[in-house]
Length: 260
Image 1 (cartoon, rainbow, N blue to C red):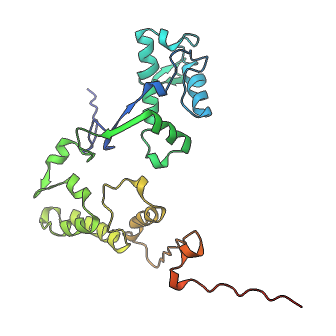
Image 2: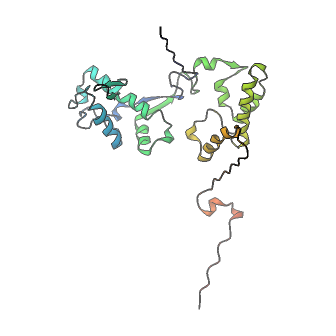
Image 3: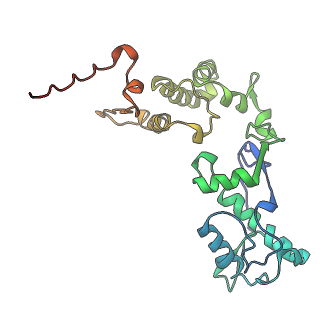
């Protein structure tokens, strides 16, 4: 007998570890007075529109391309909006309903990482709210119920890294000493590289370019590499007033003297 297992870790099943849940306004996705062939799908972006309407919906054979959306049967409405991935056309094409396709293609990404026209569509069509099950912590009830003293994993991740490093230093159980020692080195590296003010639950999409580069350096700082020098060069763009404090600006060049 074959057994299968699903490992979800400690993430909240409601929000799938995203901390927020979303509501999609279907009116922003399609015009139900039109058929697929007439351009019923109104999502912005020519490539997206062409792929979904021509490559997927029109080519699936599941829906009448010339029937207005509002005239669909109950089954057709479900297939159009919510059908899970299904092989069609002899297995050469995977059909997926409009809503799950949007959730996987757009809503699985950080908003700041989206292309401008996709971000504008998401802002118009999607409403986000804090996950009611995890309270925005991203963790399941089982994960949040496990504590060291009075601190659970969500509490620890919300700490500033400098405070988290001090808290980990106070865990003196011999049974977890190798784990806490490794964690301590990583946290200390964050502090040494100037990122001690961050917290572990900070979304990666909200990091500045310099912060993101330094976070990537942490794994190198803890490696066995030797005789390696890292140079951080983060020039500030802008006017001279932005690049220099008032009392450190270079003197203005002397005006050129003309020839008589």
